[in-house]
Length: 152
Image (tube, rainbow, N blue to C red; front, side):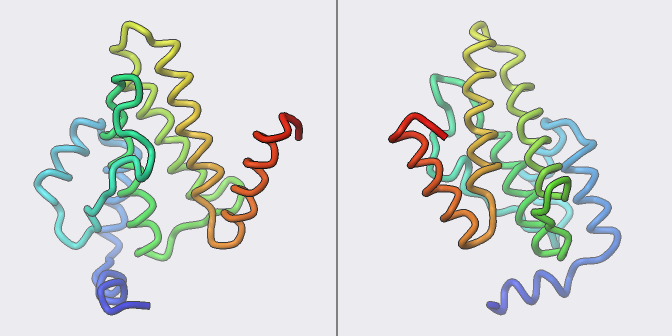
């Protein structure tokens, strides 16, 4: 474990955990983005890579804000020792919130059905590939096999 991660874990407090929960699950996406821009409160991990290796704006749909909040959830829950990738755990709640944020972005789109179908692909990707270590590799290999053969 690197020193930055250890320092981040040492700074976590119940108040920061409560604020993480609020920003992730209760605050509007716009309010979350304002907090992210201000990096407030300090002590939380505000780093992001947007939608990772997927486009931030597939077909012109602006998914980056939802991806930023999703990164915030994963990174802070891991730093706070609260990330649980078991069925029904915190990972599932963060991923479900991600889909809701994506659908929220789609609500203003003229091609809402296409946007939501694209959002579903992004959601399924984080469910499948957001797992730990070898489990993610196994899931990726399974996805490739299903895609290549067209069967499960």
